[in-house]
Image (cartoon, rainbow, N blue to C red; front, side):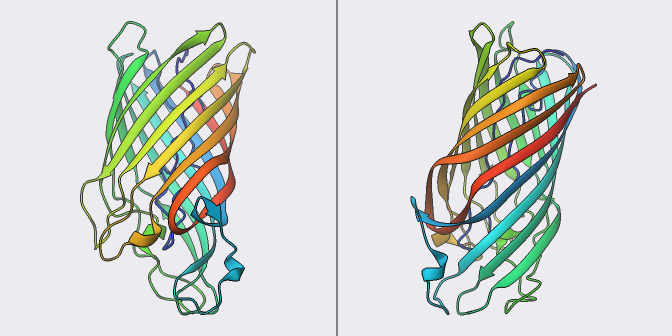
Length: 316
């Protein structure tokens, strides 16, 4: 199976924003150039990806903040860390070279520690379960080489929204809405992409995807978001494909009486090198790292210093 698209990284595509004074993003990788599913032949594809990132860097604006410098009890929440271990199964089907549909099924394991407003000891949670499922269709029949396409789909409200703290002074109290496994909202997804060859053995791509929640749920509505991605891949080595991407995520503030308006919203720029290895014609393995180049957050939020993604990809 031959593909023409370079890998695309979609920051926070599968992860909800994190807790009050939330860390807006972690690594949510669209894996390698195969897993996106822009295939030029009909057929089924499957991708299984593990993402690891620890949000332990407290930030405000464009700078880091020393969490230990805050006197306790404080008038605001001081987050400690949010450790994310996520597993995502993506199923993709192309009935023809023009059309395609992908379904992403994320499961999350998210451990969180924070010192709530007015407390002197941290509270903890450990959430596991299904996140918000995403359905994304595409059409790329505008030209013979299928080098340009449009995307449309929905993020469904399948993730739980009722998790509570399990330890510390806040034990039994509900987690902030941004830390739940799901946002509780159905979101509209609209995007476009283009890809081609810069030179012999060099491919490139560009992609943008907009996300807009359609309504609030229980007094909470996530902010609108946009992901813009550009990247290169080198195909001159048999069975081994290196990648390099720039990934921009911009996210608006939450809204509603249960939202943390003052500590939500961010603009984040990441550099993402990666490598795909062809085990055989139908099976690939890949690894990607992600490091921040620039970060601007609203209020007080926690962000990861780096992230790692490992995955498997099958073509049937």
